[in-house]
Image (tube, rainbow over all chains, first blue to last red; front, side, top):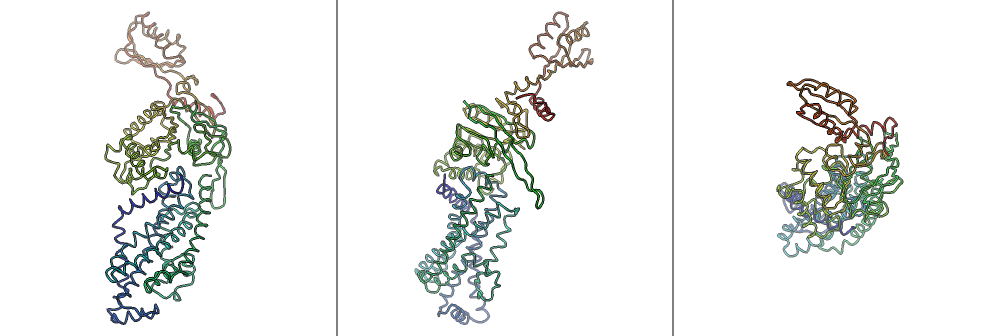
Length: 273
Length: 334
């Protein structure tokens, strides 16, 4: 009863939850799309579209058309969704499972804490990332046609890798809190971590304007590199140009795997003693 | 053949008290008992006696400090993965399930976690839901948060039965249930034992335990202080039988006096009710002996017996006597 069994169980539960919480996902699709379009059209209502597009071109260092500006904005909005859904949902679920639902006994009776949460850290982010970023496909296809689909696939690949890294990051942080502290409100970690990571990432605002403490926190997560990868894909339509950012995410992912496994083992021993 | 063997089991907890303070709690202090295959064995004891700790060790959720615990010949520490394949456990009937999943979905999730294929998990989930009566009630596909406590208890038993285990370990499975639900759970336990499953059950409801258990082990302060069938526990205590009689006739006073002498009655209460004498006496004799004496004497003295009731000591009486005896240092039973 190992990793594969846990993967199957978690995938089944996630699929059921996706069906049950479709309305929640609809919110997770509509809100970032509104942010993304608002980023272009709201300032345009004051200074005109061409002015906004030229300022954005100056920001990314490449001349953009209106369509490319929309693609850039929409792609970047997925960072908000993925961080909010993966970090928020996973940390809340982990603390709930251990502290509130009493699911820990079920897990310990079937497998080990390490195996189960390793499966959770890999499977949940994959499904959550895929499900929460489905909204990218229609606007990208509408604006860029077939090329929009290519951009979507590249964005999705980057998001999935980043999502797994974020999942492991969240698991490594949530497990010790769930097992070794008196924290019993599942939303505490999510409510603090998600805005801090997003602020520290410097999404939509220059990173130089972000307070150092938030930048340091964001540096421990893969969100900065994830943001950089998406910018490159949106502007140059090429994932291969983001190879150094992806490499950094992969390195972080390896570190998170080591930490999450160590923490998982400590939690398993702690729970059985 | 023994299904569960517990030998000299010790478990200590370190409990935090305050910010810095720590205190050691000895939950088990050399607990030993065994459970025969295909029987219902009850583990009784006052709060804090070590019942749940024992159950958690047997369920492979907790590691003992020392001692040996085996299920179907497999050590619960060294062979924990194999033990998990042959046991079904109910720990807290209102926990261990995801609120937003239905009972059926919760069971399929658990089945997959237990390495079943998706089709097997689905089939088995339907079977056990039918067995515990949740499928018939149409509750199987409702979210878990809408379940009553009784339905949650039945779902917890369904989960324990999902892998068709040979041994069931149930920690207070009827706690907090209404009369109807508790009766349904009891009936289920008896049926499961009849089908050959070994059941170790803990609980506080003595009436319930007396009805379903083949054998009982009473534990207190982490040690077994008595073990046997409910009848043996009561008999070995030598508790009194209470005889209640309603008699009429000319010689009823003489009858009562001679009956009290014959039974060596320890206490007699009497009052007159609707022209008949109502007698209540306590005798340290068997039921058969008491009944025989009453009828023989009544016949010989021409007394009419209008009503008779011989009450046995309950398991609760035995439990209280044993635990109190242990508390005062009297080890009445081994």
